Length: 423
Image (tube, rainbow, N blue to C red; front, side, top):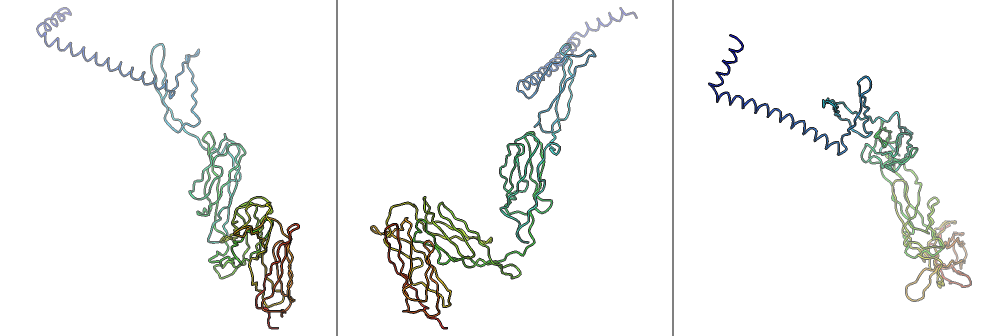
């Protein structure tokens, strides 16, 4: 059978099965059209998505030409803050339309040990005793290298307060202030330092209990005569005796206290020597009344309230003198025993007595023998010089004052029994 015979036989079969021939031809045509449409749709959708991402700035598109060897070389650079991720790259031949897709990994490098430096790398702070870590203790670190600003963060919550939390300059510093609420024995808590490019290093802060005997109790701190309600005049002082404050250690040892004093408010000062607390109203400016005086023994803190003149430099004229503590003033039996009182000048224009801002000079004279009087500022001290005091059971001491050309007083302070002591 020749080729012509074969071709004739095929045409005769097609004419005999026209419906089957039509359906077969239609199915092949539809399949080819559908396949071509899907391929075109996929390529168009991909091009559209790439175009939108390119316009949004998420993708960059560049055009390069080949060199003499037929190679096109492109250098890719990741953003400094880019996290670790898989990146896609697509190369398209603009002449033929051929496309080549590829991928690579961007790995974030945050180890700043070769770029950043902080000194010291480790701080060690020891607590006051075996039961406690240090509290309110500041330690300072300095940062060099990298790219400022630097972000500082403690990895142990509640361990330390970081000030400032952002360091703006190369060579700048930050301070970690221990809270004392959390201890961090070696290797300590980590404080991370991250620069503007994301590079990070860490420094250590070790906080451990001390070795001393911990305090289990303490004796309450008390004042004598205590809170003062009569305002302290300008330039005047008062003296308070401080009692208690001894610390009892776990083994029963009693430690004598060392007091620290501070004041709240302007133009009022407080100093302490041994157990004598001196409070002074400065002879100028305004002050908050009452002034609050804080006294601490390192374990506990108490406060003393002292009324003071709110404004100094006024023109009130003192009329009378008052004492705090007032009569009767008790002096012990032994020779050398003494007692102190504060003298306050008072003006009584109409109604309530008012402390005077004017500075007053004082003098005091005991009426009977056996007592001596001395005055420093407005503090009067009476001292026993004899075991037996002459006179009655209530001994007067006459106090006078001078404010410029104005005399104030006299006022009488009485010394109460025991006035006679056994030899």
